[in-house]
Amino acid sequence: MSANPVLITGASGFAGRWLARACAHAGDAVVGISRSQSWSDGFPGSELEGACELIALDLRDLDALREAVRSRAPAVIYHLAALSSVGRSWEDPAGTVPENVATSVTVLEAARLQAPDARVIWVSSCEVYGSPTVLPITEQAPLTPANPYAVSKLAGEQLANVYADAYGLDIVRARPFSHSGPGQQPTFIVSSLARQAAEGRAAGADEIRITTGNPDTRRDFTDVRDVVRAYRLLGAGAGRSGEVFNVSSDRSVSAAEQVQLLASLLEPIRVEHVVDPARVRAQEVMDLRGDAGRLRTATGWEPTIPFRQTVSDTIDWWERELAAERSRS
Image (cartoon, rainbow, N blue to C red):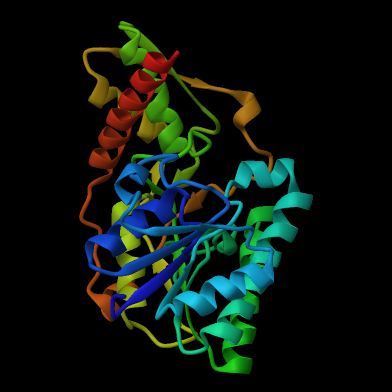
């Protein structure tokens, strides 16, 4: 086995697959933990089949997770698993909060009992900041979560802090801001816009209606490929146990600006921006823009993939996915 075995929870999820790919390309021995039986449910899953081990288990099953950690003896544990949709957390708070907290506990217990010397990269979320009073947001900003998902992520962070202090675990927390790219589900805005664009282009439309929620909400987007590179730098030893690092591009883009970017990529197809009142949330954080200065200082990390390329690559991916769906039907 490689000198650097790594274990990734949520490995068959969007960021998990990209992290597994990055780790495998770097020569790590990758063990993924997921409820899924296969890597292939999304890009770049097909690249991971045969290259990385995938263990299908429910993270709430502590005995099964302990055995997986004991038998693989990871040097690094990346904890990405979570029910991660803000919108769905409003629809099912009674499901989102208990599950995300429960899986936090089992991952920490498995690390404490079976891999106490492993570095744990605890992936949280910028949502824990809530509505900021100052932009850009630094790691010292107040934590005022504004939705059930954010509450669950902050609870997980606090549990990780308790375990690090009580048991001496080496836990570094990452707070990624919005990240996108090929393979993301359309419950997230960039992927939703890209899918709408790909559907219209495939239909040969002269004009495409692009639907969003509140056009004025702003988010700080980083390409998922840059985000997982940051996780790996932290996994390699950057930062001290207990530290928190924002992973962000240091700029935010409104939903309206995203549609304008989409329109420029689709020319000469015309784009009409439609705001769907059903997608406008009453409790909406209007701007989340991070300051990744601490991460840059500790690792030298900088985003390398422009947002325009992220959107273009995601449209291209959706075009391939939709073509594959049509060929199967």
